[in-house]
Length: 173
Image (cartoon, rainbow, N blue to C red):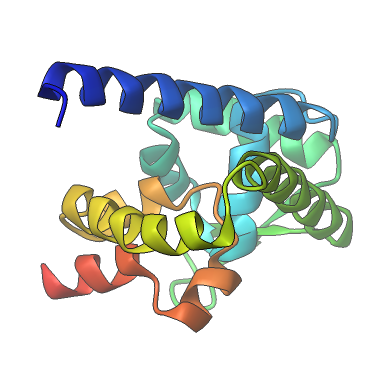
């Protein structure tokens, strides 16, 4: 086996390329920023979270999160509501248009990763699967990590398979 520096460098290059490819595909949907696209998918996966929860997932300041939410609200993609659990709290939820946009973002992301995966055989993909699952388990230490890792995921796909990120988050609690 080649030295660790080489494989670490290849992993970094691959991660950077995957991120750039996803960004390119997601940008075709027409969101005003990567944070806006990520916010829509995050809210799609977890409706009725507070702005503070979204802020932490996206690593934004409070004022940055409020500006982001204000912009999405002005585009009629999200709406604020009083929390059913705590009438003093405000939660965010997608409008019908926001749901459609989130689905478009998830489709764009899937197209980006599919274009990469088509370059390797089904057998290689089957070898890669447990490696990816283990790597994701390794970087997930709690629910906060899980929400950040999965902020642009189609969670409906992984939940059916037994998401390694969610499993790891639960095992650490």
